[in-house]
Image (cartoon, rainbow, N blue to C red; front, side):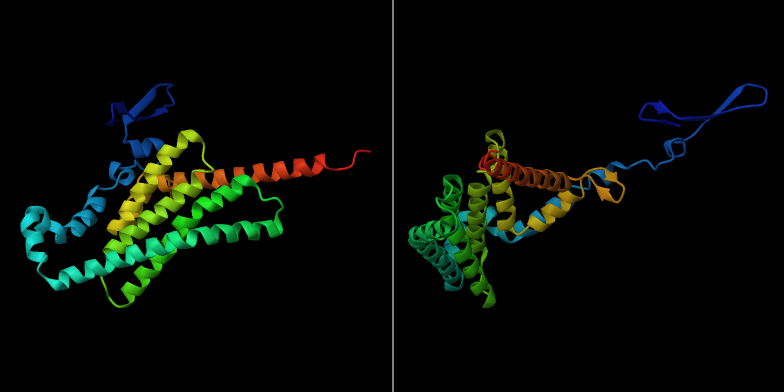
Amino acid sequence: MAENGVTYQKCITGSDGETYCRPVDATEATGQPAQQADEILPPVEDLVNPLIKWLEPARPFIDDPAGWLSSKAQQPEFLYPILIQIACIIVALALGALLTPPFKRLITVTLRRFVEPPRREGLDILHKAVRPALWSLLLALAVSLLGSVDHAVILVRTALSLAIAWLVIRVSLSFLPEELRGLASVLTWAFAIFFALGVLPDVMDWLSSIGPSFGNRRISPVFIFQAILTAAVLLFIANRAAKSMKRRVNHLPKV
């Protein structure tokens, strides 16, 4: 049968020396089932529908922003949750900024107890991570406390996702080559936005379902990213171990 411009045939040689062929489909010719296009690329609706569902409550604001704001501004049950969330964000940011200098000094003093002198590169990475890490912890605590009393947390959760993205960027970019830092930053901020919208699990499921099947696994973007990340971590560990062994060998007494 003709498929994608290719005609498959199955041929045998008879006792008279002649070759006899008959048309067959791709499955019978290759012995493997033909992979359907929807198996490689699942419907985009699996990703779009959660976004539409999330945007549905915002439709009155999208249709008439001025009218929606004027009506909601006079409702205390609408203003109070927003003001409480904004207050939590401001307190978390201010407290994190105040605690950053003492935590940096604590990290430096702690490292000097084990490593003297501390490696400048590692110390700089830890210092860069202090402020976004404190903000992430404090905002996560605010989300937990507000969620325990069934309070709205959309604004605090958005601030938390941005703080985590900033933390990941500041730490991970220190280990990445210069040419990959821009792409890593864009991906991190994109996933932070999906997390803030509450659709990150749906996005991950959709990305995990993309790609051709290979045995019991699917070669999806998530699988490829995991493989690259694992290889990068192993190469980093091997490089550090090789440098450490080289320093020890160089310090061995010469005979």
